[in-house]
Image: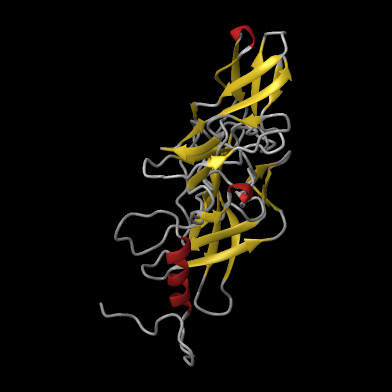
Length: 328
């Protein structure tokens, strides 16, 4: 087959066919498909609205959520359509049986006869009744993207029962890593899988199960950063400092403080930035000179380092900040 012309997009041309734009869209927004495919994989955008979620109701209807959905053209080399829904609406199921089971499917479907009547909608395809659960799944309509299966049981009167709605959405791939800084990384409300690159820490992060996680690289070389001490603390022979080293936090240096017993924060005013903090509180060794009572240091997930001891005698602390700590 020869190259298909014209390319997208050329100034002055008036013959750009819709299939060309759909192929361009397919290359940008397809869900994963097999190598050498001639048709894209449809999918739901995970960010807009509530991602076309299908919800059960206290009736024989299901509710269609808002969102942006991509629907592949079934014919080879015809690309993909996009449609969006700005308000929820309900779809009715067909009548149920008193004794038999059925599986219905809900899909986003394009009908495109090649003229100005082309349209898309979310439709229910009714399955065939079966004497055993759950019944066979109907074939997917042409030019469609799956959203959900509905397990219809004998004498069912509502669709909000447990296990009735089976989510079958495919998702559009997320964008690549977002260049940002450690203090402006994506909010945890972003979808799982969202990635970012921190220009100030040279770290690559990803949101997993609603938490920040960092991908360690053995080749990451971070320069030392001085720790800004709270009032009352002074740097020792080696200035307190921190860096990322092979994907973990490295602390180094000493700090001193006089006239204190019990515990005190070392850097509460200026905690270590995001990307240099452990997932939870981590303890590591330290000491102070009054009777050489043993003490310890700790660092919490807010980046604050604390010196603590059970000693009650006021003296001068010599806090050792030498530690290797995992980060999140």
